Amino acid sequence: MKPCEPAVIIAEIKKINDILTLFPDKVIQQAIGKLTTLPSPPRVFFETKRLLDDGQSSMHEIANTISQDPAICAKIVQVANSAMFRGSKEISSIDEAITRLGSQIVTNLIAMLEVYAVSLNEPSKPLESIQNHSLKIAKLAKTFVDPDQKDLTFLVGILHQVGEVVRMKIAPSLMKAYLDPVTKGQDKTHLEKHLFQTRSEQLGGYLLHFWGFPLPIIENILIINEPQKLMAVPFGPACAVYIARCLIDNKEIDEDIMVHFQLEDKVSRWQRTA
Image (cartoon, rainbow, N blue to C red):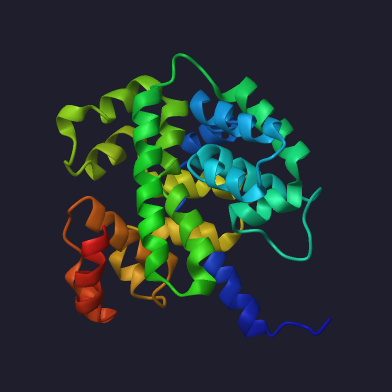
């Protein structure tokens, strides 16, 4: 194997260090570290099981169903990238992950999630709302990027709010208040920092890091709401998800991003499909 240039090593170390500085404090890290899985609503469990037990369903149909649930999707991609199943390359799409694992492993994995994740005390309606919102954003965002980035963009889109699911697991009562419909649409960044001393993207990024997810997924999630950092890299999954979220939530897109990526004409077209 050819030795790596010192400059390349230094750049990679700096890159990793920059990411680590964005992760939440020790208290939150410890709380996340105790999680074995993310909560998942039973409805998706049963539908996925039905497809798997049917014997006639294709892997593509199963992938479409699982992609609607960030929790199950995240766990399956995590397992596909584990030492036990890892192939010659990292998996970053749910279709590839299910193909690598096979139906029997997927069945067992979903059974495990059902045992450990479902709780009548979880705020299921807010959870489903977050999942549906993420899915809408993911579907729109992947239409903004080149074909070779569509799978990564879709995965970043459905996982970018996974930090909210973590909040529900760590502090259900606080999260229920945080998601009060009375405050819907308000900027809650200050509330996030007050309650948890961290932002949603940091929580989600840290959990995915803790689970051993590929770095590109984590990198994109961490910068989704950071315009200056979005402009420091080429247009890709993170910026596509940021714009899709702005369009779906009817929020103004950062003017500097519009100018930097010359998006005015494109956004006009994208708005018609949002």
